[in-house]
Length: 293
Image (tube, rainbow, N blue to C red; front, side, top):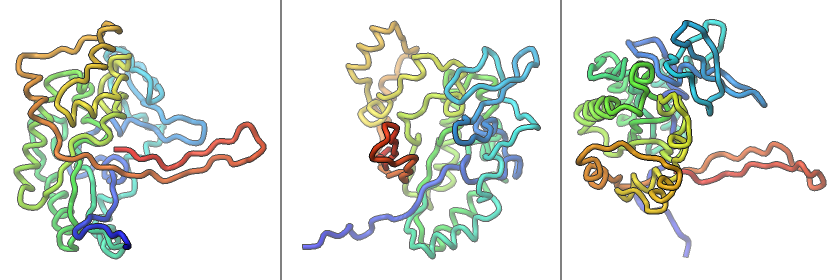
């Protein structure tokens, strides 16, 4: 018997605001950490550009820490591909028509925190929300289910500069405000929400807005355990003890974590890329699709 996907199975695609939206300085949008990441090339890393407390400018690769007190900086002599991306900000209507033509029944996209709350604080840009109003309405008009990601690989630059991003509890409260704003606005239109894209990957200043990229902030393989199960796994607690790592908590934090588990964990397959392929060369190297969440 031939197997079939169940009725109502959703087919579509997924994107991140910082990778496809563009319109970096339009519509009242504030800057995000992803806006300070330069272009890269083969064997040339994309770089974080920054300005120190003394006014000196510099850059580090995306995996490295920033100097203490450094601020994200846009160098006028550098190219930042996220500023325009694929220009969905201006082409959303025609792009969605193409999705419908391709047979999409869902479209997963992230809503830019910096477009809705320009500084990441508890202040809302109606112009930013109006952009997403029309995107969601257009998707629904084409019978495409909107699936929204709340955090996808960046944070508002103001929070990174002034609060050291997710190292501060202030960022947690501001993110909650952002989420509640979206839930209230789109409660009748959006049924599927995702919190953090690929939470096990989050490790750098661009992802988290945290300057210190030391061991405590790079050990992240257990993040999904906490997100899905609602508690820290015992193997990680022992590892923290061995490394002398402590997690600053306040009363009630563990109860919040236990009550806030996700309802589902999606899976996607990335495209494959073959860099070299030789049956005789010792330098054979190939990259294959790997499922990721």
